[in-house]
Length: 165
Image (cartoon, rainbow, N blue to C red; front, side, top):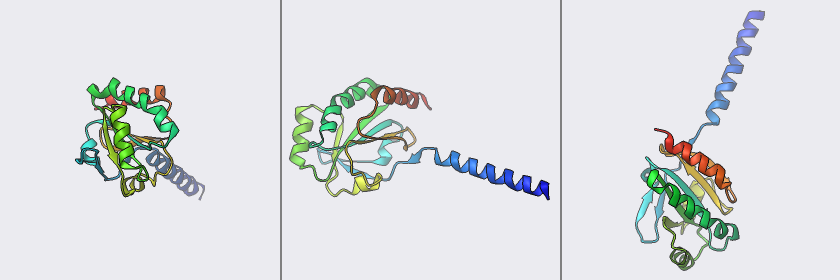
């Protein structure tokens, strides 16, 4: 009887450990279609093979505007190493404001407008800006930031992901 209880307890502990391990892993980025400022489209599938920062932002968000120079600097630092950035403007952001912001700040990466809010909904019902996701080369979300990321920590994580096969 004792041996059966021991085996059962061990099996339960092992199952719980496996569950915790699986939950701590990366999750697939949601299948999404992004409409870029130039009218072209990009999908989540297009991100595979690169480490990609997906940044939900708004022109009316003070933190978003404040972090944008660091987002640009991060893109410039890693773009030639297999890194990309996609800035997704929220549905409530007037498209003319987004275009003006992208042009006046000379944003060097792709900018999408989520006119319907469907992209924000698919990515975890994003409501707060900035909300940023780091996606690995396999198309899996490995980190989510709500608010401005710690850019030193973000750079270390980008470098680790870029080094992966």
